[in-house]
Image (cartoon, rainbow, N blue to C red; front, side, top):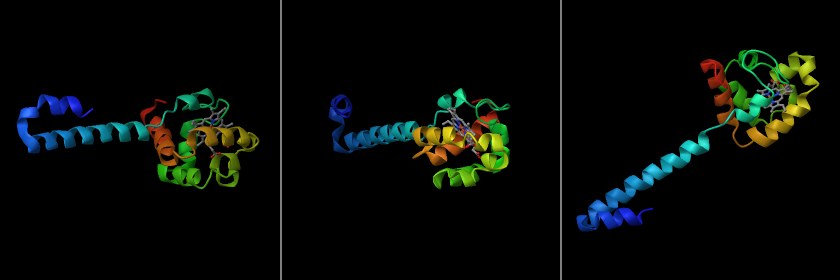
Length: 129
Ligand code: HEC
């Protein structure tokens, strides 16, 4: 990726070349970190909606029960134990289905806990999943 740029500015001397290389490297790093932190809520839509229960509870109620992104991220980071899940612990019909959500946690959320919590709260706030 650096080669064509070096070629174009070959006449510019060492300092210019170095600056261009750094700019390109920084842009590449930003692109990588942007894609790594993006958490897609697409797979969640199979079972969740924002304002009504589907297979899982409505996300506006989930967000209300946790109160903050940080609180949800904390439970995700703790491994999402059922006894710390605020919805499951207060709504027996969802506690009975906790295993389903555990599978989804393992597949999609584990390793992306903060981003997942952020995405859920952002979806509720913007009213768009
Ligand atoms: C196959 C269906 C299914 C999919 C897909 C799914 N969920 Fe769930 N989810 C459930 C069910 C069922 C519950 C209720 C059981 C529970 O709360 O543990 C739930 C509950 C939750 C809760 C509340 C947990 C609690 O009890 O406090 C959160 C947060 C959540 N899901 C987030 C997500 C996110 C984020 C995704 C996408 C990565 C997702 N879910 C995808 C079925 C699903």
